[in-house]
Structure formats: C-alpha cells, structure tokens
Image 1 (cartoon, rainbow, N blue to C red):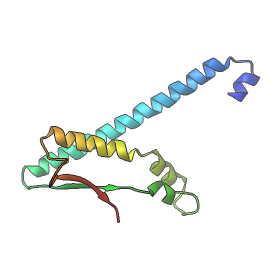
Image 2 (image 1 turned 90 degrees about the vertical axis):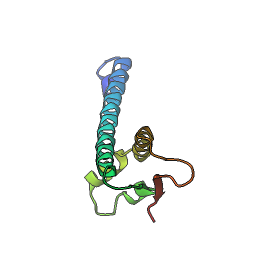
Image 3 (image 1 turned 180 degrees about the vertical axis):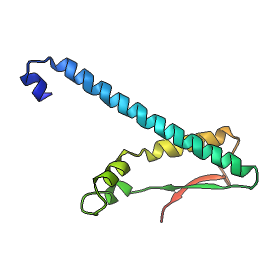
Image 4 (image 1 turned 135 degrees about the vertical axis):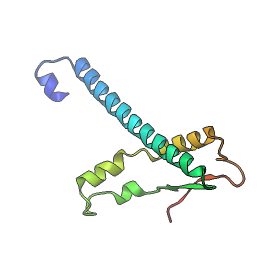
Length: 117
C-alpha cells in the first residue's frame, strides 16, 4: 500500500485488490479441504460396507508451535502446517459422517477427536 500511495494510486483500490486476493486464496483453501473430506468420506463409506468402523482423528494441539524456525524442516513445511485448517476439516468430517447416519456425539460414538499423545 505504501508503494501504491507513493505512486499516487488511491489506497482504496489497493486495499480492494488485496481483499480480493485474500478471499480468493481462502476460497481455494476451503475447496481443497472440501475435496479432502469428500475423499476421506468416500473411503470410509467403502470400507464400512465390509467392516464395522470407528474413526478417530487426532486433535493437533500445539502443532503450529512445533513448526517454527529452527526445527530444520524448512520454509515449505512451516508454510504447509500454518495454512492447514484443522478445525474446519474435523468439523466437516464430523458433519459428513453424521449425514451418513453415523453416531458422532453422545455415548459410544463412532467418530472421535482424540489427543495425539
């Protein structure tokens, strides 16, 4: 924005373009998450025809603090970890399993988010 202001461009257009780029990136990320959850649900429904399944997903607590500089994993690793939306994926998976008549809440659920430890 500072460069645009120095060139004499109105800052409203610049902020509008930045918001557009941000919303476009968010929509792409949501679409990738939706495709991932759909593939997982298809795989679960295929396996549930043969077996009685229980699905557990890890509650990834403090993973972003582990993905910081100095862990020698690299910039791409940090970028990947920080861009994941763990809660959105978990809730989408929970909702999809509930739509398939799975018991996801209450006593003896077939879907749980458990501690990674």
